[in-house]
Length: 168
Ligand SMILES: [Fe+2]
Ligand SMILES: [Fe+2]
Image 1 (cartoon, rainbow, N blue to C red):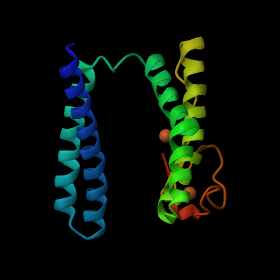
Image 2 (image 1 turned 30 degrees about the vertical axis):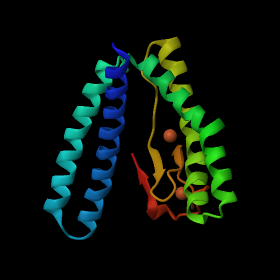
Image 3 (image 1 turned 90 degrees about the vertical axis):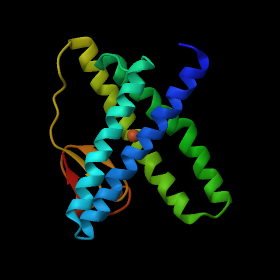
Image 4 (image 1 turned 180 degrees about the vertical axis):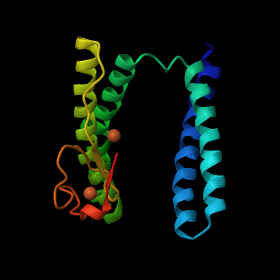
């Protein structure tokens, strides 16, 4: 692919991905405001943006089989854990941006778990050529803490109560 087209598709993928995420978040806001049709509109258009993002990513050659996709996910999470979030957090601390310190800390802690879970999944799929065994996954609605296994009394990262931990 020509360099400029590739760059444009990367930018388009990033933009559509952000729109998808924002619309899902806006959909939740509308739901809480008692506006179910606004929520529905955001949700449907979020899906359309996912379709656009997927089409761009496909053209970029970024969609492979699950072993390769898991490795890509491991690489992304590891970069966030080892470089991106530690650096972002230091800057936020330096600039005394309390909210940003908190949001980067939450992400940093959760991404460590994500990298690990993806790593274990990749090992199983690659070596045994079978699907992974997976129980209920819990995700904290406040900080994104992610866990498979027993549900503790409180989120170990942010101390949110069980009522704020979602099961998948
Ligand atoms: Fe993650
Ligand atoms: Fe949490």
